Length: 143
Image (cartoon, rainbow, N blue to C red; front, top):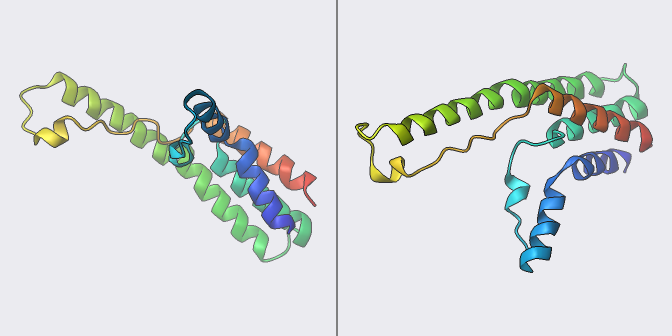
């Protein structure tokens, strides 16, 4: 139960989407679940979720257990991806959107020309660090 609680609370408390969903409902009286599937923002909920789970494993099973390095490795991969790979992909999307908008000579299908690539895909290192610290804190509190 501690793992699930740490997992759930880390994600829920770090997720700014909860505020967006409630605000959307209060203004339009309709539930909008799309923010649940958006990426980016402060803090990184993926980092919080991974580190909350990793910390819960460390507290309950110890850092010498075979589960701990698996969780820590998974967390490191997720946080690296968020702060590097997905962040760079978002920057590429910004550049491509600008090129398509400024270049009328570019031969593209009409559907492609009007498509905007999603530009906020990753997190800054600060957002990842804050998410990781929040997850560690929650993992330590939930026993």
